[in-house]
Every structure is written in structure tokens, then in C-alpha cells.
Image (cartoon, rainbow, N blue to C red):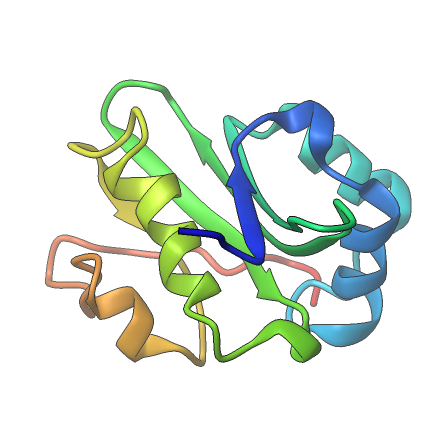
Length: 139
């Protein structure tokens, strides 16, 4: 079956300019970050997943995770370009990032104010009494 999109977890394929544009202009979270901050986050990510158009190679989606590599992972910066939404790309990214990746058995966390239905499909729920969070000083 032919597919208009390709997903890949190869960090060398990430198109930093596209990710920077989305994170600095399109998203509601983390706009306090500088480009240098985003580049540092990309360089230090435990895992990244990109979505690319099969015909042009243009990146149209992104997600990253940080982890200790053993028992805990944090999902961040999940984004699909507006023009490419509605094709199940968010779900496919989460499948590759979480269930098909090396962290399938880890405890995952994320912070989001939207797309709860997507994340619930991958086992995310509201925290229980064992969870505590220290808010960031900036933002």
C-alpha cells in the first residue's frame, strides 16, 4: 500500500528549521525557548520521531522524548503541521514513539491541555496520588 507519509525515528533526518518554526510560532507551549534552547533539546533528546511527506521529504510532524533509558520517559513537543492533520499522523507518531519503541514498558508522562483523546489511546491518564509536579520558574 502506498502512503503519502513516512515516519522515522532517525535524529539525523529532523529538519531543525521546521521544528523551530512550529515551536516558536505555532504551539501554545514553550514559546519562551530560544532557537539555541530548541537545538539543545533536539541534541539531548533520548528519542525523536519525525513525519515526512513521501514525495518531497518535507517534515510535517514531530515528537521528542527524554528518558533515563530504563524506566521513565517524558513525551514533549508533539506537533503535526495544520495542512497535514486528519490523516492519523499523531496516532502513528505515538505508536512509533511509545508502543513500537524501546520505551514500550516504561512509565511515560506528558503535560498537555489538548489531544487527551489521542494520548488516552496510548495509556495516558490523569495522575494519581503518587504524582507531584514542581512548576517551571519561567513561562
